[in-house]
Length: 61
Image 1 (spheres, rainbow, N blue to C red):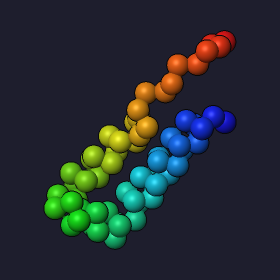
Image 2 (cartoon, rainbow, N blue to C red):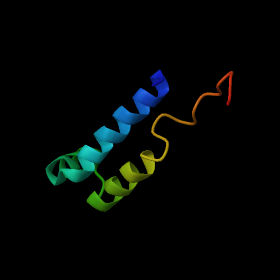
Image 3 (cartoon, rainbow, N blue to C red):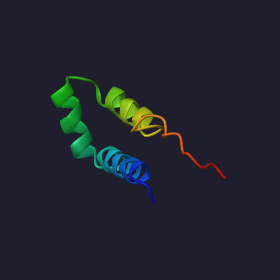
């Protein structure tokens, strides 16, 4: 597992935990002054590429 894959897994796991626990989702929505639905949508979008595009590998098989 590369450093990038580890970081992506950590980010996705954290976002999934925040989305799954409604109290945490409410806390984030209040802190950001956004609606709960908008915060959930933003977190789901971040789960697609949480750390940006993957780095180019030197050897591609």
